[in-house]
Length: 405
Image 1 (spheres, one colour):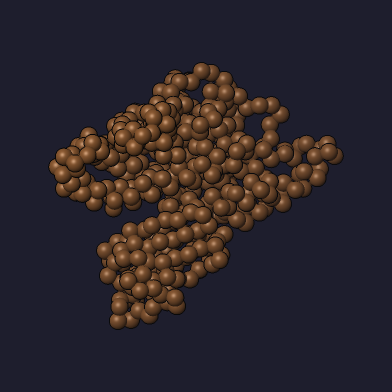
Image 2: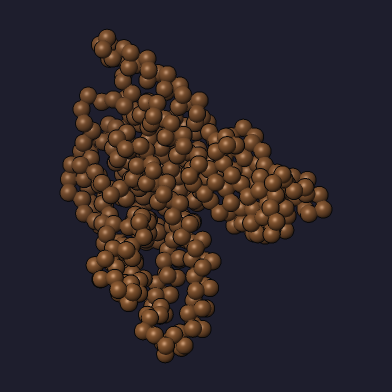
């Protein structure tokens, strides 16, 4: 099943492009579902029809859904939340406050992503189009599965063993609620779901991201940052859609300066993102609402291209052999040394770019080696690993198995 995620700065026309993509795919005979994870849903407005929280027929081969994030939260978090509420009640917090405090910010959004796993496993559709929230929320959303899995895999097993050991003693000494098997089963189920979502969205054969931008300086700057952060977490961008370009046949002098500015920004987009395909859409003389107009929009964006194709093969992270060692290569465009920090601790490599950090569990081949250094080659960061007898510790290397580059 093909999965397409659309994101972009708020107001660039992301939902319209996602809906137009879905309409064009459906018209080509692909059974298509377009779903919105944006808390401020606007898919129904784009199609000019009522859309529910489950797959709603729109036209031939096309369904749409606007996810009820609160409902998904209650379905996936309730058993875990019940224990936290009991714990806070015991500490003197009233139930209403406890229920509010027991919900981690962003959980409602991440449970929306579990619908992606459900649809892929059911196999009812050929294409799933995901209309994501604006870029800042999308980046947080796409990084959450890996971050939460990191905590679940490392902290959860220790806590479970501890609880099993102290439960008989604690229950005799105090009324403190102790987590039971239902709680741990719910955490394990959450871990399984999040891991499946991450594997689906980083699958190079099926899942890609398409960035939607306007030919504006601030929008392009945010798209560049988004492109970098998506690469950091292993997501592949196969196209950039530049929306709302003033058509050449508009000759009114009022738009002359705007056309010149847009031409400069369009050139910036090409220089920034190529060889990723740059798709364009003109500024139409009306709102692109309803299936017929969305068909026009889809034709404008894709031309003769097949919507469901992977338009560009990207490899954000890969490992290759070099002499007696290996090189871990990460695509990190638009990043300077001052913006990032890299260090190794045990069997993990920590990479921080701006405000985002990723913990990479190193494969066994690299675990036996030491970090020799890191350098930028074009827009790729190359981290060298070598055997201990040939490796030299980088300046600033730390003790206790920690190395910093």
